[in-house]
Length: 320
Ligand code: UDP
Ligand code: MG
Image: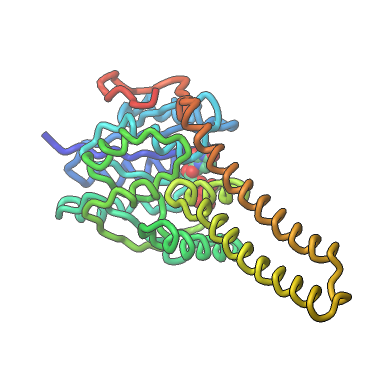
């Protein structure tokens, strides 16, 4: 029996891109000896994305759709697709054709040669603003130093994962997630493919700066305890320095020149420092407590309103 490949595509307001990307994928597979399914996850789109998907799904049962009850974000949408995917390998990609479907060929070659994870690195992102580029560079620079694992700058969600990788992934229960970070964290035999991302054809990039910032923050708190420790280090450092300063102030004042610093000035300085430390520590602790809170309430990661073209054989979703 032919091996089966699942293509997972999160889609949020992509009505114009959906027919193009699915046609491009069908074309790629038409010359390949694989069975395949294309799983679109409609992440609460407010345009006609769902209608497009239903239309496509009617003429081709390999085009499947999970319809979310609202927008849960790309990370949840990608996860949902992976939770129901049946393939021997799973490919994740964006709906906006910024991830060239032609590369799937290369992915499958590497997979057949034994790669368990094929990841891509974007050489040049046309249409991406310089602010985004700088923040992305900065993010990877800090993240790699802080997290104890390696994620390459410019690496994307356009990937292939072997079934066994996804089977392990399905067991991950965390709610605050960054899909590619979790896959990178898992290790396995990895191969890299580089590509140049073309511009988006239709619509606008849906990732606002706010969402990107949230994602970056999530990655730090998911994979590193440094922010929590940082407050501690900072506290020790400032306590030490201000303690020294205070000692100098007091000695100068009492023994040599009593008018140099007034007691109130001394008190003021030390108070300012201490308040700063306390506030910073509180800020970081709040971040972690928010995470614990999210994990503890144990709400599902997403809600599927409807499944289209699934035959009911797919594994029961771990998180639902
Ligand atoms: N996306 C999603 N939910 C969201 C935002 C985006 O499923 O809340 C999808 C979107 O439809 C696209 C992919 O995630 O398929 C990447 O989004 P976008 O092109 O906006 O991001 P960028 O290219 O800047 O990474
Ligand atoms: Mg895009």
